[in-house]
Length: 144
Image (cartoon, rainbow, N blue to C red; front, side, top):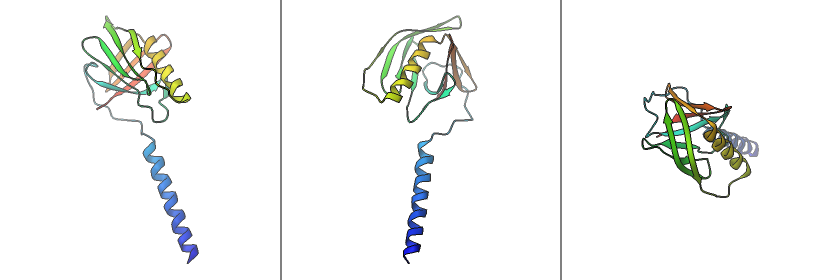
């Protein structure tokens, strides 16, 4: 009788762990709708410089049609100005909150903000927003 109870407990523990692991890992999207205009859209970062976003960081940005940019680097919020003219993208000075974040999240946020400062082109293709320039790249998918 004890053996059956132990086996049932272990089976339930394995199932619970599998559920926790599968719900904690966001799958990479494969199908993306196309959006002709990247403004007035919440864009969620999928990777920075070719490296997928780690952990549960929710890095996102929004480009308003009036030249305002705002979002989250995963821990801190940012806002400022941007311009997109003749195919050249450029951010103006950006203000950022100064919350205390974990070391890993702070490093990823730093890399995101650094890449955002360096990119100078953007392309909305296959429902994804690609930004690149000066050795940096960002890839976003449309959020809700």
